[in-house]
Length: 81
Image 1 (cartoon, rainbow, N blue to C red):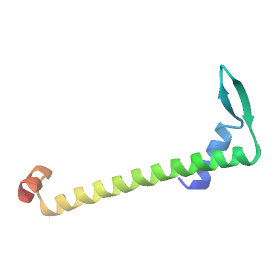
Image 2 (cartoon, rainbow, N blue to C red):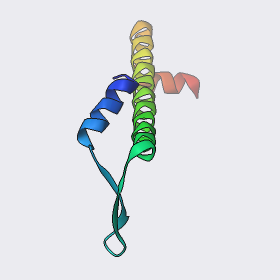
Image 3 (cartoon, rainbow, N blue to C red):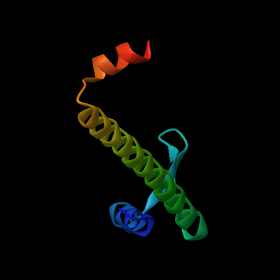
């Protein structure tokens, strides 16, 4: 998913934002602060997604290498120790 798609999902899921607490009351977050908050959330979600994709690609590459070598992960660990 692209950053702009994540941002659009967040905007749809969170048409309004509030800050505060039950003790002090809540205030709406609007304007530039609202946009900045959504952008920040989108960037964090996008970074997390990229990291997960990278980990998946590394795992697939490792599996492919072990398959080409015809050995198991345990056997590879033995060779490296």
